[in-house]
Image 1 (spheres, helix red, strand yellow):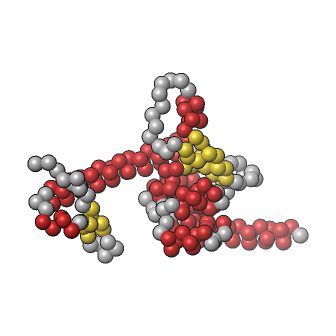
Image 2 (image 1 turned 120 degrees about the horizontal axis):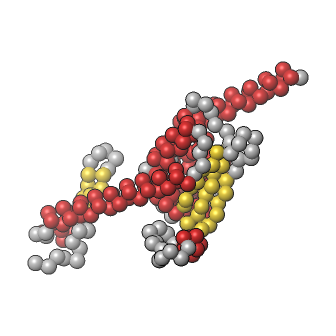
Image 3 (image 1 turned 120 degrees about the vertical axis):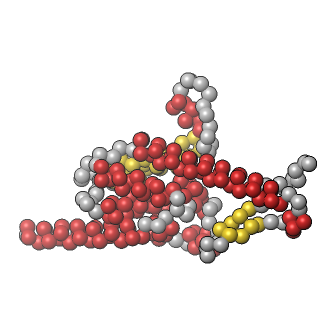
Length: 236
């Protein structure tokens, strides 16, 4: 028997109360293939989930390999940060960006760089060793995050620092903002458009689930400022 055109279109959706609802059509009620259709839909969903998991793990590995991190403490914080951010809301936006992280010497200026990279440029970088395998978007953005300050034995503050720098890089870039708006419902789109860069940065930190770490960063920064003020007072 030939399958119907709608075969495999059933979808199961998890609700906030841990229950599951099935999205079906009216004609599904009397369909003799509904059991096979549901099993097939579940199989497709599992395969897509596995592909998504592999994409995330590959992207995290690529970021770690290409970044320049000199301390093990920052390295472990960065790995946990990436694992959490890719599974957070708006995590899909990251696939249109390549994030790289660099620890710079103390006293250097911290800043972010955003560089559009076209598929043509990627082909040139690969050279003439054969036809390029195109597995990502036709164009993405290279975002380089440089930071000079870290906090010894304070993993939450270090992750808060990384989250802040990444959120600021996205909040201040027009293309990144465009990608973010494409993933938001209408209510949040209007809210996000009205925010300035500072509010967008804080909103992204909360959306990615790093508010507690950001608060730890603010405490460490406040303590550092107080120490500097006291040191200056004693010198006078």
